[in-house]
Length: 132
Image (cartoon, rainbow, N blue to C red; front, top):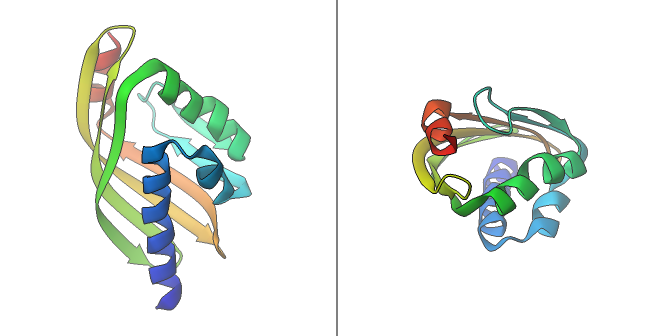
């Protein structure tokens, strides 16, 4: 049980680091070969391998293309080497001035103390409306 609590605490710390823009801490939690998957319909849809690919393909774009982009976890579900978070994400797309708010489910999987994979689930139609 200590491992599960440790993983949940690590994910809570990761969301806090994301909120403060602390990319070194976020990227440092990832295994060198992390597999990061954004869903179809998300503007950054696809699978990214490695922290640098995640930084370039997801985080840099979120930081430059959106105002007030926020990911707020509300519930943590823990099982063995997996932490599932449920929460709300929102932001305003700079190019259109349109905002969105939607519920997300994130699935984080660990190998030891490092994040091995991440998969996002959300209503991408709500996300897409902000882009048009």
